[in-house]
Length: 163
Figure 1 (cartoon, rainbow, N blue to C red):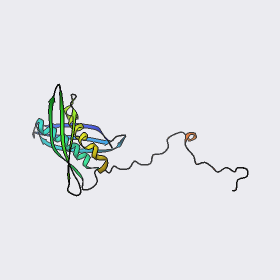
Figure 2 (cartoon, rainbow, N blue to C red):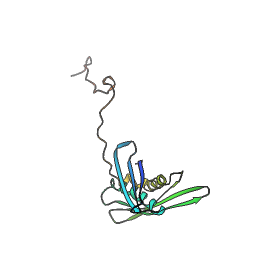
Figure 3 (cartoon, helix red, strand yellow):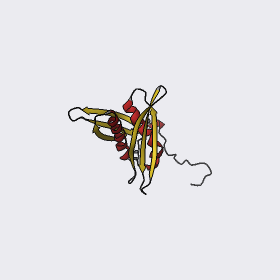
Figure 4 (tube, helix red, strand yellow):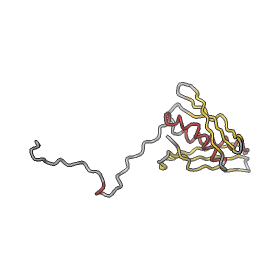
């Protein structure tokens, strides 16, 4: 089960010295159902990263089975050779009170905000399919022309066949 990133925004309120992170996700292949997460923090690079990861988890937590939740532990970036790698650690809390540590990492390809969101999703995607309760897609009508739609076969009388 994969999620698709539809929108990532980091809005600065200089008067209040705060930022607001907004992340909008959808189920891959079904953009009709969207999940938005919002988080606020004091303006600073480390807090900006945390707010983006927290907004991502807030969106994801909306589709989890009851009594499961993802909690942010840490967001960091490291220089590995010529590349900056963003690493996010998350804890999955289960209904029985167990904690499972998860780690996600992605290479920053020039969009730090997007990299934080992607690293967060990378860490939780392996568990998401087991703990999420996505709305079932509604039955969609067959949009093919009538002559191409599958119709139940009508019983045809065959010579010598009993009715």
